[in-house]
Image (cartoon, rainbow, N blue to C red; front, top):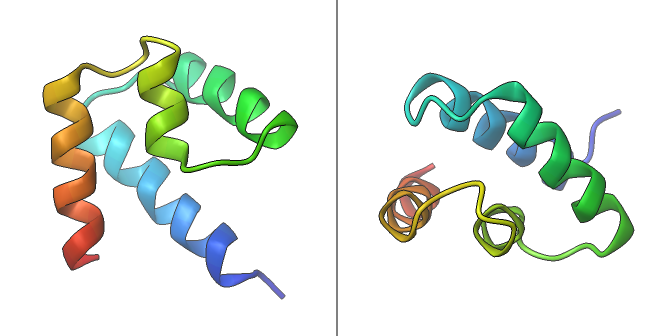
Amino acid sequence: MQSVATSRNAHLIQFLQNELDIPPAAINVAMRHYEQDPGPLPMVLWQYGLVSLDQLEQIYDWLEVA
């Protein structure tokens, strides 16, 4: 059974790929760092330069209504 966090991350990953066109390779890098040092996935993406500040704001806007 999937946890709520895992399900939410799966939906977030779909959003990242479909709406923001984040390459799967960038998401994989972020997920590796996320597994080693769990924190908010959007922040991991931003800290490693995988999304811009504008994209980060879009992600958090999406998370508010998701």
